[in-house]
Image (cartoon, rainbow, N blue to C red):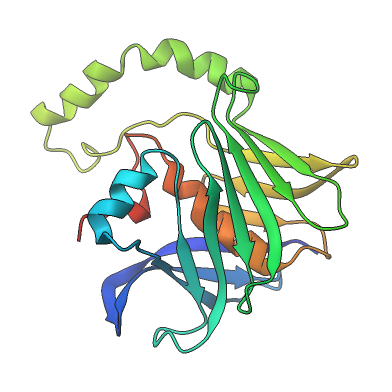
Length: 225
């Protein structure tokens, strides 16, 4: 049975003791019902928000998944262990134990597409690429028109004037002839197809991938307040 983890913005920004909660993650086991399993909060460095925003330009990310809004119980956390063109992130459990590692290789560093690798102890690496090559071949010529697409809404007052097209974002991970994980851009949802996958690793992935949305997107962790 496939389970899903969906990143959702909070209806309003909620301030908890010591910080602000940014998003929540809903879990569904395929039975038709879902429940909130984690609340996402940026883990700020000593320099605060300005230092976080400066570091994220080099691929650095850090956040905590809390069990509840009052931040009483820690579910998991994600820290950066290497930035730059090959950014690596460690997903840690509440006691600091490693749940897995996520590696992001930027486009044109290990292929023409951004490559995502999920590594777990005792399991083969799962490798996925951002978008299908076919749709990238469609997107790249269209991207030359983006300056006109962005300027056009300035002269329009229609309800969709702020909606900009984005490049392909879907990711399918493959390992040992299987597809254990899939990220669907519609709804920022991670689908876990392997029963041995830890949902906390999937939840960290569901929060991490949208934080790398391009300049047209609005990454949840880029707030300046």
